[in-house]
Image (cartoon, rainbow, N blue to C red; front, side, top):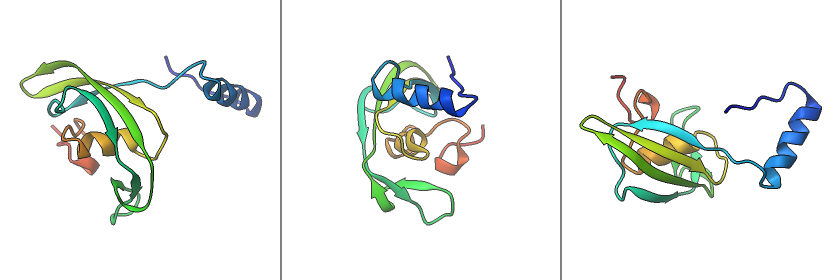
Length: 115
């Protein structure tokens, strides 16, 4: 399910509901390989990378970032992951997955191939 706020009042209600814990963000992603261990937490501060617009673990002006992950299924050339960002940094799941050894398929900015 994807929620969109189409106005200021709706945006405020969604923000309030999230802060109150009435919903949370969860994602499903395809990675090049399974992370080791198969479930856990990626806990690395994310900041600015040398390349413009990109982020990296431990980059400039890094802020705390935490993502939970779990391997759902695995094939020879891909792994299906369940992801939950605990914090909300720019590109957080992409950065953490790459740093954790499981770059996302198609994410060439963070180590994934285009195939």
